[in-house]
Length: 208
Image (cartoon, rainbow, N blue to C red):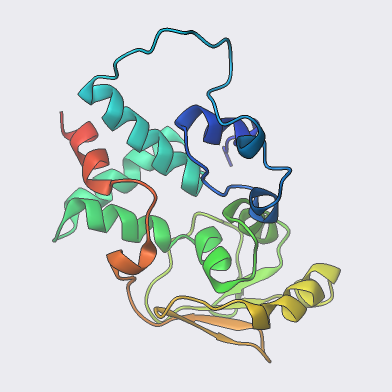
């Protein structure tokens, strides 16, 4: 499975915004963006004017970085969003939010989407009682996320269970803390997602 393997903190600096890709580290003084809040590479005194196309590209790159999606897969999400009825930008955002790795992050089972991806690849997670193997799996309303026996016996499971009480999932998800089970109750509301990018601008980028 293809994924970005470079330094993720460099993405935040390149895009000029803290994207919270490293979990707790992003909230600590060790965050590279806090220490060096400028683009990586050699700095120039001259400020370049960014074109409209450049701004659209930046929004698309920001969306990809936040959800950890490469270009080919992101194009497929866009094509599916356009195919579905409704606003294409909202459809795209909902598709990204319903990815399994993102849902683990939203439920509090992972500190970041990257960690959610790793938990799935370690075969700790089940979807509707079956072992999950694909972090990019898009779930539906009514799906149930649980833990495999291997996952429940891990130290990570115990850490998550101890910290879960301090976390609150969004209203479109529910968590049974005793059983460590998460459920998808409904499609997420766009306002509640709190996206750090403009989905409409991403649609404009691909529409040209």
